[in-house]
Length: 373
Image 1 (tube, rainbow, N blue to C red):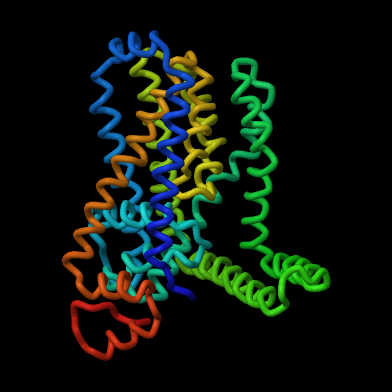
Image 2 (image 1 turned 90 degrees about the vertical axis):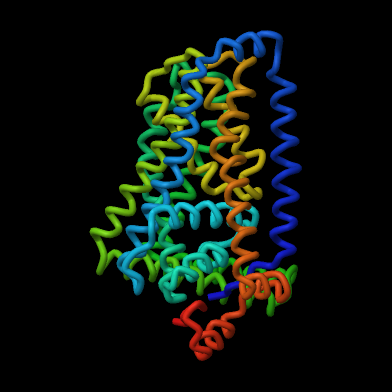
């Protein structure tokens, strides 16, 4: 499994994230802010501020518990919940800045690896963490059927649902086929590559390299899941339970923002709407979901609030779920670099994480360094 994460990729990802996210947010605020916006802000029920911030903190703690659940079955019997939350913060920050394939979450895996898990275990956990939420999205297919033609939905949200219905179903079906019928995905990929090789737009060597990497990703993606499903069913159920709670807390944060402004939509219907649009955020290709996140929840808030409040609501939601956690994660990452000179050398000077380094470390016998698989 390739373990490369170049510093230039992180820098570019951070720059794109900041420029795009801030630019989109400024545009939304200019479009939605009116005189009534400032009046409504003064009437915000400030008792909801500690509730919103508390939910934001609890969200990462609970997400970390999914890692605790999975890690205690590995070579290390336990990872503290606080450390697990920090791992999720750091990994989420780096992962959002570097849009990469499942099985290539190098920083996620390395941070787990620092916890003295073996390399294959840390990779398995990060891949598993990416697979499990996909199954939570299966419920979106019946939700789409019930939400279709919802009389209370806004034109913006109606357009959003029409635009995402097919991609949501397509993504879920693709992931399920990849897990349960990987050979069919391989046959389809081979057919596409043969077609492209005949067209001669892309060189054959490059096409075959893509095919080899794609097949390796599919094997890892499917193999890791089935190995856990056969031997650790209860652990999978527990991890999925923690992820369900994590998603639910995310939805409660948006609900608390609505309540703070004095809007009380039907609770479970609003939760269903958020679960429906969740895959858009989860599979966003832009760094940090910049642009995608904002417009997605702009559609959600437009269901229950006037236009002059939806922009500021998106800003509050984005701050609690992204901006503040990213700042906290950046603090811990900087501290990691300062305290671990070896990590700094590997990531900054060499610009990647070569697998052979792990073998050298293991032979050195230093207890503070990472064990090779």
